[in-house]
Figure 1 (cartoon, helix red, strand yellow):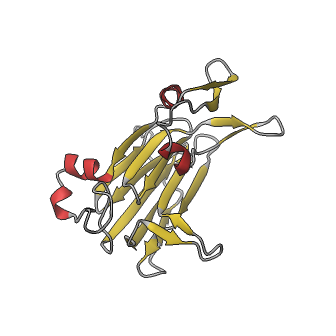
Figure 2 (cartoon, helix red, strand yellow):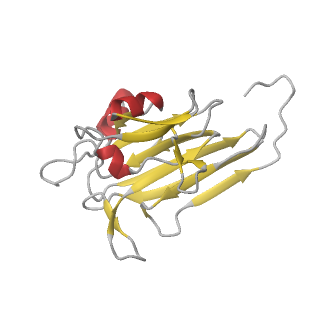
Length: 212
């Protein structure tokens, strides 16, 4: 078994966006993960994404501009070469999910063929769910300890207010029973810039009676 923890202290920017140092373009501040192992993501010690247990490749996307957290089964798409691969939905696609007439394409794992349909059908096929950070913190009873966006700050009430400091922690567990995959990316404004801490634990031996 391999396990690890990532800690990222970060600050909300004034609009939930951050400049890409390479392209010099503003981008949405996002945390993305996709993989078939156990992952739990906490912000300020509140569980915001739970992808624990035995499962196929799943994803989570935290959109800090709007405050929405998306989770679901990572879709499989057909590449131009005719091969298939997992592809995390883009944040832009998820945001336009309610556009009338929008057609979505994906690989139907049950019938083993490509198919198209509405976003509702696409979301149902991949068990995609979304919930705001405000809803998550409220349900956990921790909303009062946060400063949320408002009209005055020009921030969504579903996300943290500008210039507030937070800490994201990701716990990762790879069971080692077979092949594994992991895709991770984030662009939050870390404080300090070297404030991302990774702690890894390898070669853990569990008693034969343990169940994980």
